[in-house]
Structures are given as C-alpha cells and as structure tokens.
Image (cartoon, rainbow, N blue to C red):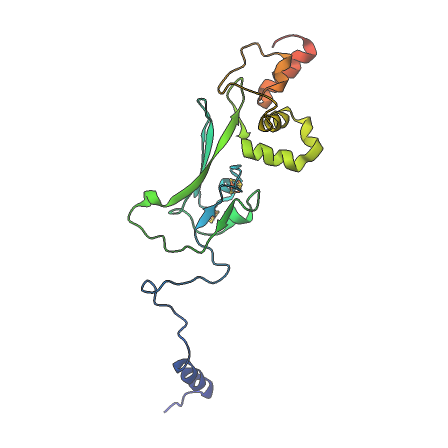
Length: 207
Ligand code: SF4
Ligand code: SF4
C-alpha cells in the first residue's frame, strides 16, 4: 500500500482546524478583496462626458449619445453592464482619472437587462451657426483650467469661461443669421465656421 506523504498529511490535519476559504454566497454576502473589479460606477461630479472611455472599451459596453438638436443640447454617456467584462480600461484611461471607478458590486444577475446600465448626462456645446458639436461644457472647462493662459488663444474656451462667469449672455438655440460677420468671432463656432469668419476678416469677402 502506498503511504501518504508527510506534507499532504500535515496540510489535511491543518485544514481540519482552519477557517474555510470559501463563502456561503448567496446565503451570506461575500465581501470582495481589495482591488476587486466589479461594476463600473460613473461619478457625475468628476466625469466630463468626453467619451474617451467609450473609445477604449474593448467590449463596446459604453455608449455615447449626443442630442444636439433643440434648445437644450445634451450628451449621455451610458455604461451597459450586460456587455461589460470588468476589465477596468475605462477607469485606467479616464481623462480625469476619477470619472468612473470599478466598485465592489458583483451580484448583478437579473431577468431585466434594461436595469443593467448607469450613466451621466452633460450639457453639450454646439456651433451657433451650423449646429456642429463642439463638445460638452464640462470638458471645455476642464481644458480651460489645464491650459492656463494658453486657453485665451481659443475663442470657444474664452466664450465658455466667460459664460460661466456671466460676462456674456445668449438666447438658447439662437442661430447667427447669415452671413456670419467679424463680431461672430466671439460666438461659439465650430472650426469650419470659424475659418469662414477668419477668411472673411482677411479678404472682406463672404465665401
Ligand atoms: S470595465 Fe472594461 S468592458 Fe467594462 S465598461 Fe469599462 S472598459 Fe468597458
Ligand atoms: S471623464 Fe472619464 S468616465 Fe467620463 S466620459 Fe471621459 S473618460 Fe469616460
């Protein structure tokens, strides 16, 4: 007869008097270990809706929906947990580093997939002439703060900053009537429309 090795015998006796390594889930709630990657939790205060996380998400679980029409343009950034594989790329590569964190929640089983999502909604800035999307207001403000004095080289950033300080006023949804003029430099314009204004400024001709 083959006798058990001494080490195996020692481990077996030790295991008899040790605490179990497994938990009794779902009868007892399991507390994940530090560093566990559970449900990605977007932070409404820290997320600037830039959409960078949607570009790096390997499973396409993050959706960016722009509602650019109307008087109240918005951007939705939505995490779909039924598509997520909890890799943590969105947290790792988040522009602000705090826009989303993978929390400890792992028990997401449900019969209703429509409940498996969370997201943020932010104001969207659009070109006042053609309606092209410039970006979410918070993203532009984030850039303004980081660029410091260099931000004053960009009309859109100046405008968004001044609007935040209530130095300018604007009727929501108002469009610049054609042809756009030199004074429209101080309006929110996409690069294409701004190029037209600058070209007009140089040549005094409306293209
Ligand atoms: S954890 Fe990974 S799969 Fe899930 S939303 Fe973030 S990047 Fe996408
Ligand atoms: S701030 Fe971070 S979490 Fe929010 S949209 Fe940008 S990359 Fe995603």
